[in-house]
Length: 506
Image 1: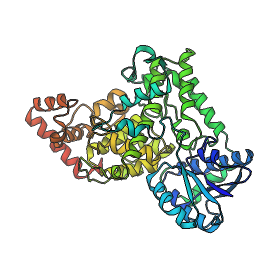
Image 2: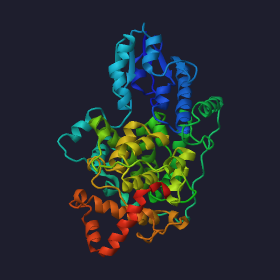
Image 3: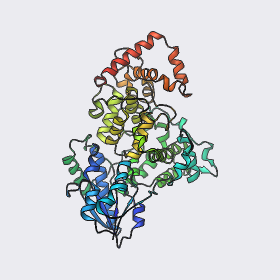
Image 4: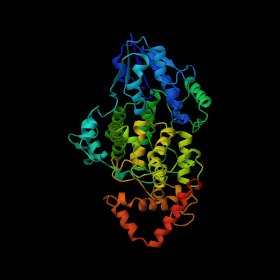
């Protein structure tokens, strides 16, 4: 008898482990382990989502005829897989697992699992992604810098998504320039999708409340689906109600509106409850059926086919050294409000509220508000990377680390993106209503009540001139800085220095 290990982000019936084993002869093992739940302080909703989805998936496997050994949290003494395997599976004829999504755990699989129980471990390639094993390293070979746009075009050709022969549908690869409209309230917001909670959900929510009370976030607003059927409902809801306007407003932010037209599908994709190709094909079909415009469909598919696969490729190509990158020499700790949400900056407070209440914030809130602020402040990349890994339901190391370290913090020196995503408060003001509700003045940069993003932005530009002044995408910014009155520049820098001295007061 062989043993198949099913990890918490491998909740898919197309998992290679299942294809490799015989359900009549072999057994599957799933376990809620303390080491995996607490190596960082994951948001309470993230733990609840994963544990409940695991339990539901185990039930699905049993209904498919599999023999499943399931180890619920608190009902066994094992903190990690090594202990579990050593105690229960020394007599197995072999252990089978699919390559995991985190370098930390993969190292333990490769180096410790077999030694802990004296049984051979077979680790299979994860074929559930759209980029085949080996494709990304071949594409990246010899390139000093990578660009997602060119990788994305290769993936479009490879999958034939939104293609007419060798040409992209609509004559353009990318419609991003059409996807930057602020939301003014004229378009009705989509209905909210809710799910009925079953006994498994209730048991898990109670367990998390008891055992993870010191972890960030609240369980009060838990709204995630926890079954493959509910994940399919979420996909259908997005295609019908959100995708038609997703493109126009994907960068918009509004006070009190936490999701707007965003899909909320990334946790289901990253857990394995949704298949990425099926999701892309559903969006593509909506375009062909006339139910969604091309700019929305292309923008959505680009996030999955392009960006999601791109960051995974970078992660496995460059780890473990990638996690240590800090090319800007940042060293500051995260301010306390990243955990409490208590700040006078309204944009930040809104994003923190959404994060703590829902284990969610959409990509612009992460990139251009909380991430942008950490970049301008000069936060240690490891600190902000760990925070993102902790607080978001869709955060797994392979997707979180390149997004945060590379895209948000530009700590890899531009390997992932050609310029830092640094911006002043004017960007937030253009794409949201946040500044209208804030006590700071987004129109000034040097006064005592000036928007902190403004002076910190110019301080960032000033202190990193040596690194960025020759970047062709930033030359205009430095020309603008050089044209400014020297007294104005000094006043902005002085204001920024006062903020950097004690950012916890903001």
